[in-house]
Length: 279
Image 1 (cartoon, helix red, strand yellow):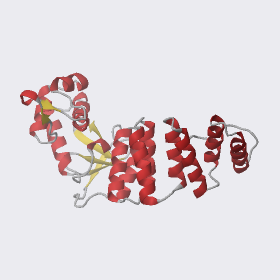
Image 2 (cartoon, rainbow, N blue to C red):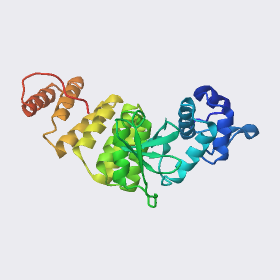
Image 3 (cartoon, rainbow, N blue to C red):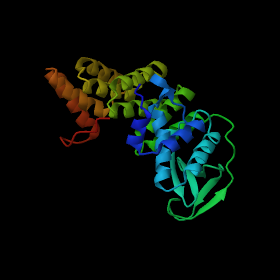
Image 4 (cartoon, rainbow, N blue to C red):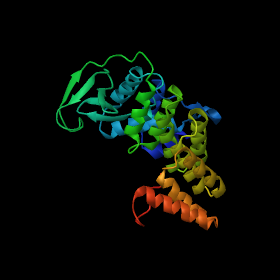
């Protein structure tokens, strides 16, 4: 795992060392120690520090930044990843966006926006109940979905939490594998899909996604088997027939290629036309 020294943090985030030190003393980040007891920060630490950077850029005073992020941890379940949150300054308050909810970091009170986004509109305060129990698998899943477009790394974190809370939550496993694949983390994505198969059985979509992954990795014969298994579980999976037709053509299997392309066209109800989505 890559670690970052204080100078790298200052260079990457342009965050004053005094603020970094204050966050450490507040217990919000716990960097490890390197040679000569120098601080070494993890990527997760950088996410926390990036939050402080954004607040500093909004001209929030350093003492308020430290107080807000320290209070923030108290109002979260212990397993909540900070990367699953969006934090901004609204007037003189530090506001947290968690999915569709918005709340004040220092008090834990919910905020309601009357005019569009709270960063631009007026705010009303309601009481936020204390977090007394771990978040559910469905909570993590919905959080992951809400983060996919803005912060894929945070979404991956959320989906891992969802799977940890409920091993049978197949949709979370599918989304986790897909995001890892899109991020180029092919080994992790393959493991996610194979774990899904081991726990949830031969789901056709998981097998199809695994086939796409293997094909992208140049493992054509393994991809062929995964596609065939997917069609064994669901013969009406049109996109799988399409991918398999192209793969059979590459593997010098012309009869199989023609058969799968014909089946694809029958299933989608057109003659010719464009290619389907890869996954």
